Image 1 (cartoon, rainbow, N blue to C red):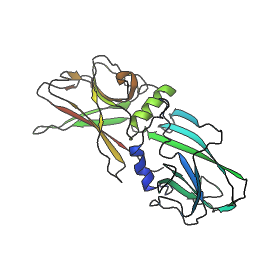
Image 2: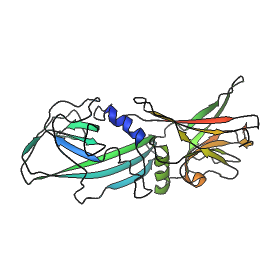
Image 3: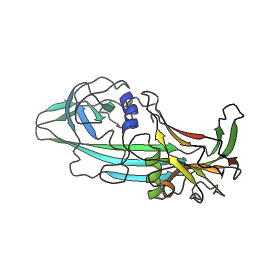
Image 4: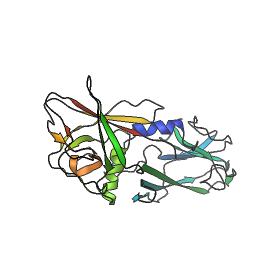
Length: 298
């Protein structure tokens, strides 16, 4: 487990909108937009919210645009988003820099990541080094952020809890709607635990494809808004819930789906029962569905 991502950073994703303010392209950058450097020497800890001795903080990219890529890695069985961001410092004084971190805003104790400068920046156990800068020097820090969604366990079981009755369990297969870049944008944005993105929970009808890369059959589906429940700091789990009342979705269903802004043309996650049309909701039933999104340090 990397201790360089702070506890504050782990919580910050739950309050971060996964969509940039200027477009519908997800950047996942709002929780670590700023980078700071300093002269402190203590080892990083998950409880850190700042540097030991910060001397400068910036969100300037120095003219280098952020780069993004999305992919489905069928070998590692993960959905992967990668961004490369540049931060450029212009110094007017001399410093012996020893530490750096990434922050949610331009000031304050809100570090989401902290470490010492090291011989190998990808190895937190490599030797710490000093970077000396003078008046007029520039320093460029290149930040590579990788977000992965585990997709190794395809077969699942969904259980419906029946108050004062017998619970119902349905085995099935989880999947998504394709592997193109547009689809992966939707998938990652919809499953990001932060606020600001409208989502829906849907019931799927009829015959559904079992191939996890195939789009769902949207004919006859029913959807309700998925509400995000309040986040508890330190839990690293966010619950989304949607409710079908007694007057809605009274039919036979063959799967579930979790979607983004545009309902069924924006499927992000789906679960298809092994036996089609295996679950029936009647007008005496209220159906409440939950989706828990959990995250952890890499």
